[in-house]
Length: 300
Ligand code: SF4
Image (tube, rainbow, N blue to C red; front, side, top):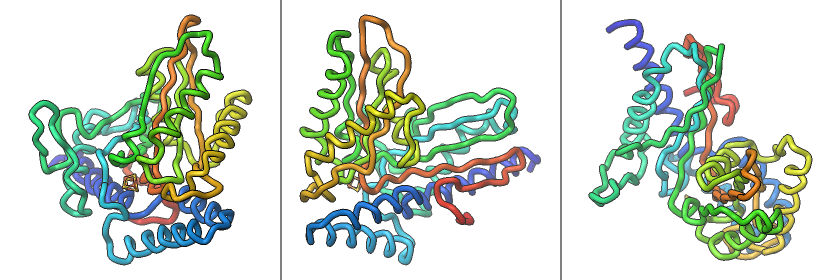
């Protein structure tokens, strides 16, 4: 086996363990936010639901099994340095890691070939897992977000292009319409990702990127950060509460990511994460030393 083959095997093994971990244990920021919301809710029902969520987390680790039956379709956001030694092998590594984790974690078989309408039984298929790339010049490090896109949290996703006159009021109406009509398809409290850009695909990509940000972070643009807060306050007023059973808080947060737009169009998209927001971030250096950024203190 060549040195490169050994590195590929090693990284595939680590990524398959990381995918399995993401299916079992929520990232630190989500765990903290759920505890925080649980303290702030006053109704008995909301408190019971939050304590059940906590018990679910404890049991998933104790019994070594996924914390939700829907382990989703795997998506990866990759920020890869141009000098990372396995840049050319990374797509195969991630695909094989998902296949391995499907057996070892285990993961539910969620990959259905469109048109053929056949479940591959492997969680891999045409273009799946989905990989979104950012190439980072003069770097030998790779940073990988792993995300399990469950059915319930994928269903509320929506994108459209608004007339320019719709303005930010139009963006607000779009987001609130999605939340009031489809928000319950995911299991609240939700993490809401909003993309504002120039077309449906640019806005949709930003809305997914927004879900990869740690909870509590704010958009670097002051006006966009204020918009995040206003949307958060507005969606909380709907009163979804945990699991949609009513409460003071509907969301864990609202994140907005944005890009410049054509003057005649406002592209807007919403993507939603559920309370079981299984997102993990791992960084590898060129020797494959790794750090689990989202799950501190974990050894794979
Ligand atoms: S919305 Fe989330 S918590 Fe609810 S069933 Fe789907 S993946 Fe599981």
